[in-house]
Length: 299
Image (cartoon, rainbow, N blue to C red; front, side):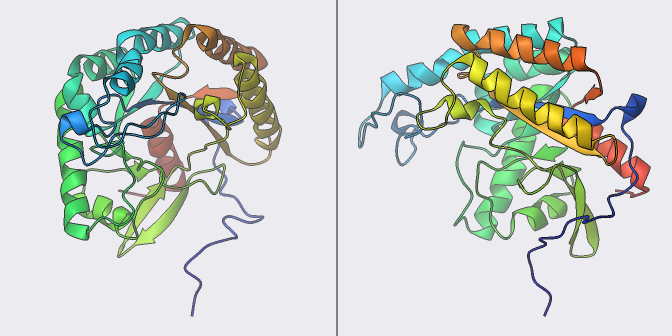
């Protein structure tokens, strides 16, 4: 019986894909829009979110303090991030929770108006592990509808917070509105998987080149830590990209990298990658469409 897990990938025979302008690395900036979708008893959720830099979970009662921490993202962090992207002419993918998009549609609409992609990140900011199939199907449809309404255009990408279910990918294909998902962390290059009779594209994501590591225990303290680590990853991928296609994901959050002590690290990172050369900054939808076109796959 074939193993359900693929540990080989492309092995020694990667597809002969070249990025536009013969770039060595496709660089994907992902801005996660989760604020307003974090779990909150005040919003009728079963509990409050427990993940934040200041860890003091309130159990069984509303937590205005935590809501205020998350509120920093759309109120202050968003403008700093989107302005930095504009200054460096970098398109990004704004990975939006459906409830966040419904509560701040202006943010999603503004990002799309500036040339960025809006994609789906679940309805609430929660893991899907353990969800029933019917419930997950409804969550996918609701999220797609909410992001489409806020963005003014239908999203084509999906990323579950951390843990999907064995059904997620099949339900995305069944929905029919998705070109790719990012529910994988196992490679530095896109790849196709069989889902029933269909071929479905996966764009792997990354948790190491990600500002989430500013959270306690994550390893980043100063903005310089984020900058140096991400540049080291880019430099290695650029060298490898001379021989085979490489993709780099840099994950951002409005409430994290948007803080005053960190935003300059993002600006310096974008400038340094530009100066080094060999990068194609692209949205995940652009990367997906290029990959499918060059490999001759049809969706």
